[in-house]
Amino acid sequence: MRGTRRVFERLTLHLTERRIGLIGDNGAGKSSLFRLLCGLDRPDAGWVRVHGLDTASERRQLPRHIGLMFQNPDDQIIFPTVAEELAFSLMAQGAARAAARAQAKDFLAQRGLSDWAGRAVGELSQGQRQQVCLLALQICSPRTLLLDEPFASLDLPSQARLSAQLAATEQQVVVSTHQLDTVRDFERVLWLADGQVRADGSGPAVCAAYVDDVRARADVEQRHGVPHA
Ligand SMILES: Nc1ncnc2c1ncn2[C@@H]1O[C@H](COP(=O)(O)OP(=O)(O)OP(=O)(O)O)[C@@H](O)[C@H]1O
Ligand SMILES: [Mg+2]
Image (tube, rainbow, N blue to C red; front, side, top):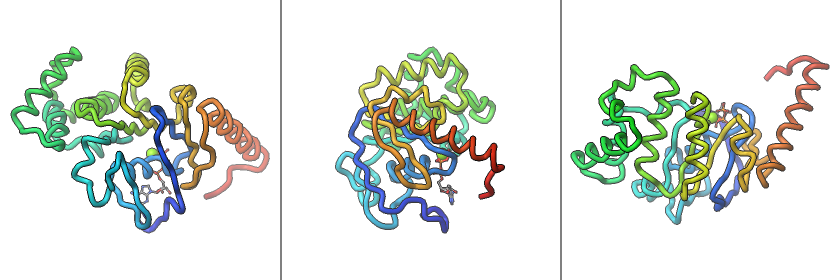
């Protein structure tokens, strides 16, 4: 449940592939599924296990195993500067404050971003804040990365960089997106619709099915007008 709304019912999923895409209309349940997977929300019934851990009873151990890059950076970022935010991620995994700060600075330096360390997060653009969220996840290197519409605000060079990083990473990656090109070649894509899995299969097949469905709905709307929710 989210608020008073039942988002998922009888949902059973085993997510074992290394690259999984998550697609579907606004409100389909993509972000809600991520919140369940990383332990931010608990299922009202049933259970979620991640790398053998129950997300409700073993939540404290989860950060080493799974991490979420939020769709909205302002929901994720807590600290005033970039270095503090990155250090906080490490501290959530048990690192001591001084070691975490030093590692955060090194991590930024390795990426040519030393000047970001002391920058006020509130003075960064939306896309830059999204990059901070991604860095805060990458510095922790959990076994599974959940990326909720990570391409949405990135400029083209950053999108290309992220795609290359995703292609190269050894970790399991689950990406939600409305930019189908970014997941079309994934071994598995899930199409969510109203909290249900509408299709589950190879990236090319599921993306094509979703595009066909969107086209069909657009045709109906053109002929009969936009349906009211
Ligand atoms: N904070 C909330 N409180 C109550 N209901 C919520 C909340 N956030 C989302 N919902 C509801 O949960 C359902 C799934 O929303 P969710 O955010 O998971 O969709 P989404 O697929 O991520 O959509 P988008 O593409 O817009 O990001 C929707 O019906 C939405 O209205
Ligand atoms: Mg969402």
